[in-house]
Image (tube, rainbow, N blue to C red; front, side, top):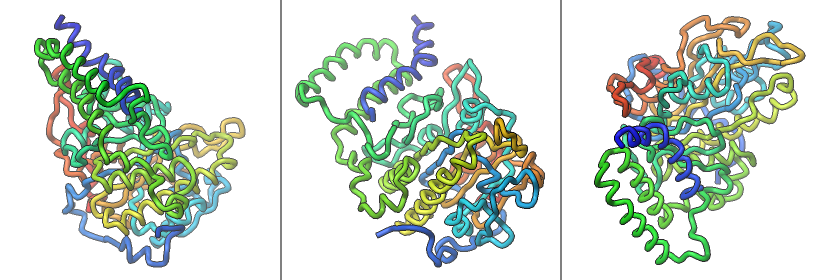
Length: 435
């Protein structure tokens, strides 16, 4: 029986969490940047020594699923064959250029910290996404927690009836809570325009009868919980309690972006990224600790220049408006915003595969609370093939986010099998990126 319970604690709980989450939960600002963008974000040039660790009470992570090209976005290479036909445009930071598809973000560059020296050895999509979200390589013996689960586990949840960790989009490969308690897994929102689904009882089931069913389940389950009293078993029970509390809470309104004025919804962009960013702003405004917005379609290969204009425009509009909206509401000083992707694209442009997968050099972005903005950190070589200066590992990128959120990166946390783990795999944050 002990062996069976051990199996429940490890392998079965991930599937259990997925089933519960799907079954129970289901679950005036406008336009481009204005001329006061520099005043809004400021230079923020400070000493390299970090001073504001713990400033980020909330994190919004925008994950560009598919491998966002660095050449055409945050690390253009004009004047060389590998740069392709994309033009570079000047940002508000002297000497720093972005790809021509990001004019709003180029104007808001004073409020951004661009990392151009990310690299990994993982060139497959699932492995790259897993590494980026957990700071660990994917292995069969254990599943590591995503960053949102870590932050909620260590810093707690201050959002009253709301979950502390939310995932907007679709990605079945998300590591969720990994070996941490399953109630720390992100609540999934497949479509931001539809909000949290399956939160109402079916017509045939009254609240009275539903509560009777829950009481019966609790009675049937009581002996098992008493006999196998443990943190994992209690975590499963807590998931039901939290789900039931959320179903009856007025806080559910925060998931309905239709409560926002139409001009605000339109300003973010009528697409899943734009509407996801709007939902993320509403969630952190209500106290949610961590929100990931997943936006796929970046695995373009030979169709890159046919589809890039639309994809990059969605990012440019959504992120630009998110930053300005957070600032106008006084939330940017306590909310860190990050942009990640699993790898970059190859310098060599092949007519059959276009820009292929390239983990050797790619870009990420940080902004908001705890981040020293108005800078570019690191550099790829002139061909965009490899890192030339100030290499930044995936672990260090995530460690920088965790440090800004006040996480002790030296503390050890133990998986159910007794193995010790550190947030971000023990990697150190980048001091130059921290405010």
